[in-house]
Length: 357
Image 1: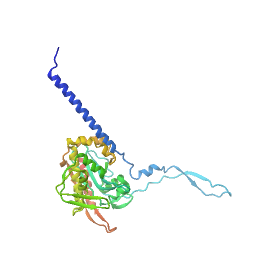
Image 2: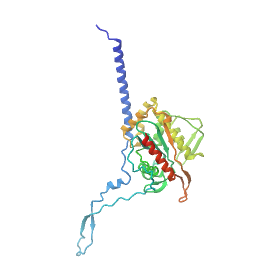
Image 3: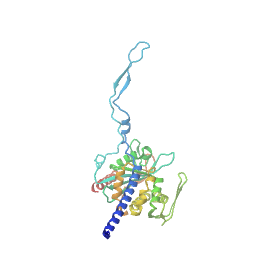
Image 4: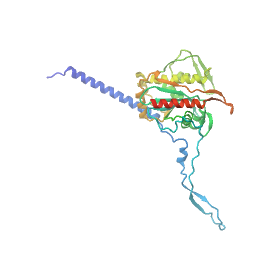
């Protein structure tokens, strides 16, 4: 009778543990892929293409040509092809020599338009938060640019107005086109998150590693807003994190709110990248489906998750879009104006980040 050598038993135990770990990892990846699949929406047709797809403008149409006829005779109906017409061109902003819209999709980094959406029953969605993110495909520094909701911009088909109106007029596709024209940068993907979804995501992560920087109190009975945060308080719940990101009832107004929104995004990335949070992320499939939508395919979400699984908060950088807040002389409304020189500067910076990633 032969006895098993100790090293052989150790090898068998190690193999069993490795197999178990592999099964757990595969199950986790499946859950993450399932979550990504639930929020995926294929890109809609580009603006102006949908109407063209519905109608074949070269198809024959009946044309009635009057001619002399006998009493009681039916008019003759002749069919002839109608010459195709060129589709009407949408309004375009003044062309800039720094325009990137005609450039092909660059390698190295992708641009994401992140939209925090205020969706209320019986009303069209409104974009409460507009962020542009430049994300290297293989990992590295993420750059975030906040776009003020009141930015004076051309909304195709609706003229110049506040850029957040584009969400009301035409949803994510229209606000994407408006941001592309404002900043002269092609946007690869959009991600929309409604308030309820944001709260549930933060709750599932167990809160965020942030503390409230000042006393924040604001109530608006018209829309149910009730913000009451105290200086030094931790953001332990999704509601607290959302209130912190939305507050603007202080002298900083939108400037302070955009700064805090970047803090919150940075904290979510940091918290989600911690190993102890991975199991929570895998459970997000049941939360995300009804509250988050994106045109990024599931396989690419998995790729990004692997590339940024250990990202530290200091790897999330911020960009600033300079402008002037003032009342318009035309309609006496409050806007954030960005001049052509600043638009050109930001276009150059975004191009550099995409090409150098």
